[in-house]
Image (cartoon, rainbow, N blue to C red; front, side, top):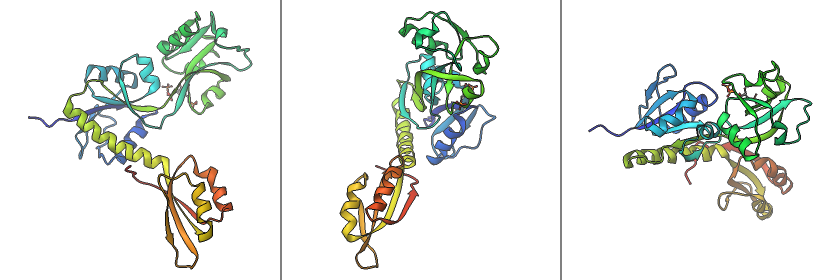
Length: 287
Ligand code: PRP
């Protein structure tokens, strides 16, 4: 009998590819590079990788050709497929927004009544328009949506915005956000038990990698009479570790903090008497 293998679909090119491969690598999964291939197999984990067109991935997962995939939530919503989001992955953050030429008097979604809107996301846009009871013309464009208003093809666009530079370069202004998106691991809702077991192992590894990415190991020295005040500032996982230094009356304090928090507490720690503060990346974090 063949050993079961989990089949994952990832983008063959585009904004998610590099980060998807990097995540698998950090999970300890070795893949012989297969960018120009349709399929690659992991050497040390029961995983086969299919490189597919982004917009085709939800269908392949629904059909069971792939068990799971890495796509943006924008792609999932646009597909309308009933797939399960097993884990948000924290990269490729963007939003799908309505934008209009700079200087347009946009007074809310009703501005779009009777207007021509260019987009590669007709389904998501239609849901937004229906929610607001708006009739408008949807122009489906598969690339370079942002040029549509400049060439007189549309009055507005509904497109992905990440840094905002594409809108800026095309003299457009973002007005309404339809959805916020990031890369996520999606799965078919009915997976065979042996496949689910492999997926659980993969999710465990992803959890360790993603937690580690979001946290930092923090070390500092402080006089013993300042320890209580410093600990009160620290939003650590658990109680911090406190160890005596060779210098009498001083200790070293260690803890783990969220990457998003350390800038806001660093000056408080210094004011409270912490010295020699070190912030170190964590490779894996098992909770
Ligand atoms: C999206 C979108 C914009 C750009 C926005 O394209 O269509 O062109 O990203 O990003 P920014 O706000 O950082 O400028 P994407 O790179 O996904 O490729 P696409 O043209 O194939 O949609």
